[in-house]
Image: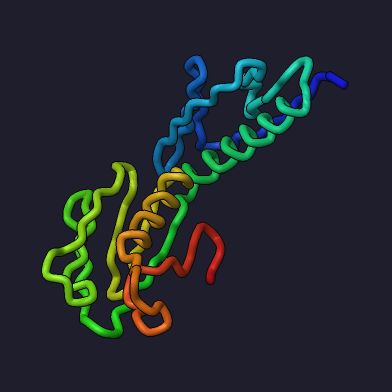
Length: 180
């Protein structure tokens, strides 16, 4: 049965929200996050200090999309207040591995004794710091921080070797509120 469904997200003080067509921009103390939300039957509007997500009439599909949009906007609001942090541990048992950051590129030298360094570029809007054997990734955009952490972990994936013995690599040990 189709009926009108409305969700709302509170906007705290110090956070500014703008709508431009289907683009939602959230600006806060920790940065700015922009996201395009492409759902034709769902309307977004700012009502005071609250974002109202509405669909009339709504089917199960629109209700599902509205829940996703609500979660995305909550993550955006949370991220611009306190950025999301991922931590990766550098594990090097066989060969001493050297991890450095230059600009927006991560360079891993001497991974499993390889002569050619492994490099990967990460997106702008992500801050990467190396503290000893811990690589910290920080960004107000949750998806950007998570994607960068998974790229770094995938860069040191070992194939055709016994993973129980060759445990060298970068491994996620903390992600946005969850410790492993």
